[in-house]
Image (cartoon, rainbow, N blue to C red; front, side, top):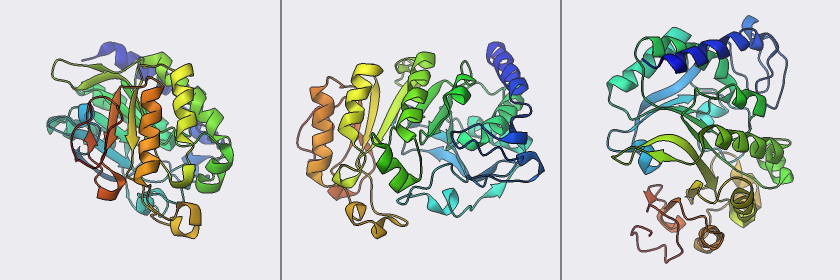
Length: 323
């Protein structure tokens, strides 16, 4: 039993005890009283709502390993991405309400299934409830790493409360331009909130650390979803990572974008990413010396599996590992 983590969770739960009475845990700061059923921008209820949970074998290799990452997909979101591939539960609100005790049970069942970690997918708007559940689960023997898998629209003060609790941070750095963030995700001030949150994440956990079998146990992985027509501004984000976070940061450069949900209403993102667009981002990472991480196959293959153990430019249509 990790007594240090339990103590840290208890202390944070005490600090967050009344936070949902005037909710301000994300940059929206809606100040609604969720404890009496009021909802803000994210539409999240008082009790957590989850869409699904299961061992996931499609995450980055050191998260999925052989036995899978124990993903818990939370419904609702504090962003409204017009291209969201998970729109059925992020924006159309599908999912099942559970109590904090039931959520703790989900965590324990995923551990019993031999998952390598507990992967909290889009957890931002449920942080207080998750931590209450985590306290129950830890006291009942949960002892695998906690992954905070976020779209990156975070309030740095909330992230600071997770110090000593989250083992692996898995944030998106989706945009380098606030105009694009507002246009495609209705996320005002995304760049500043995202960058300050990711810097805080890095200060807590540092670069990625692996166990003897190559499974991640601690650290930061940054996801970069490449959007068509440079809507994501990913090369600028790479420069920011290199000079403001760490040249040893592990990156997950993703080519898996396709025009889901409402994306076809926006001409500039109404297609998949081209091979050249994706290759330019991978090459930029290499030229900046950001060589840790994973890439995906050519966008033409529509294959989301990650390849390689480091990022180096080469032909991306051969299906082979990079590096």
